[in-house]
Image 1 (cartoon, rainbow, N blue to C red):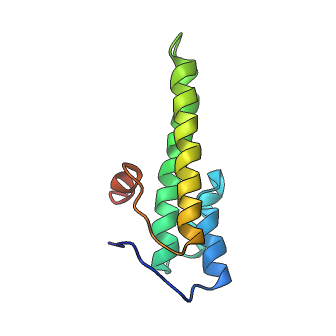
Image 2 (image 1 turned 180 degrees about the vertical axis):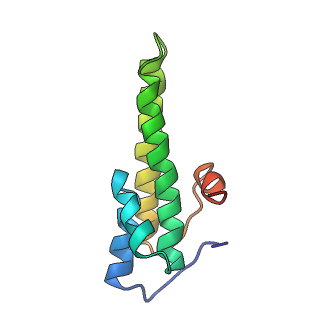
Length: 107
């Protein structure tokens, strides 16, 4: 769909909306408001997948013994992928994050 798009003339609103995609539950704002912008929609879908991963990580805390480990590694993964997504937005690119983009393409 979107392959490493380089946009030199992104507006401030587009950049802010794309950045909101990677800030936890705020990923729903771009999904609902800027659905027509392909750049924002791409980032919003990836942000939604990362948010769902974070929510699922919370449920791992209910698993005895291994739950804390699973939660810890998942939380680090969510943080790393969110930061990579934000860097992608800052550089005005649409980087396909490993695994995250695979799931996002199926949404």
